[in-house]
Length: 258
Image 1 (spheres, rainbow, N blue to C red):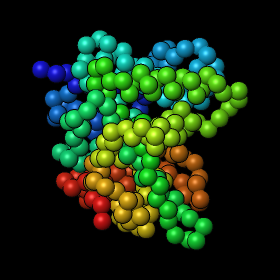
Image 2 (spheres, rainbow, N blue to C red):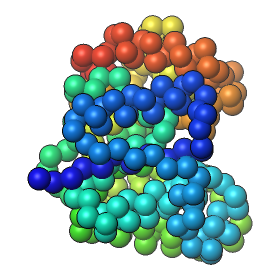
Image 3 (cartoon, rainbow, N blue to C red):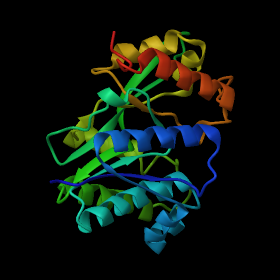
């Protein structure tokens, strides 16, 4: 019987409430699915080469972009058949519909990023993200991504975008090689989360129009919490209300394309 491990990482507990709720949703899903589960702390960064660590200039998103891949490889080399990585700010709100891809040896998450356009409307960009990853033992995509991530960062001569070795790199490569996409593993921008907090809105509708399949789990963009973006601020009240909408409205169906 094949072994599937769900792997996460976050700073050592105690976790503040929103992260704790996200982690608990993943733990429950793993248990319900019959998967093994593991969460590690900041020691995950011990896996990083010195040059990569130096050229990340202390930016945690860049550090974890490679660390997650190395941690996945370690578990696969230790005998696990498949590893699912989910960022700690991932909320699984429709667990019965959140199924990992059956075929293939790898998968990456689906990003539909919604933000205002200059005309007062909304634009929704379709990309991929690394907040949800799946790799099987011997997957060539894993070694390829480890090489590409290390190469990008080790060539830096100064601070760069924190996303350069994560979603930006993954999306650029996806445009060329077409990774297998885990469509139900989504991502919600601050504008979509704000709409969810109030129950509905144009940003949420703009996202659903660009979905190919219902999303049943979503990354909540922890790196943007407490930051003001276009007049919006994702505080705990907004995030908590958004989670309640996700669970009450989409628990059985997922966020479904229009």
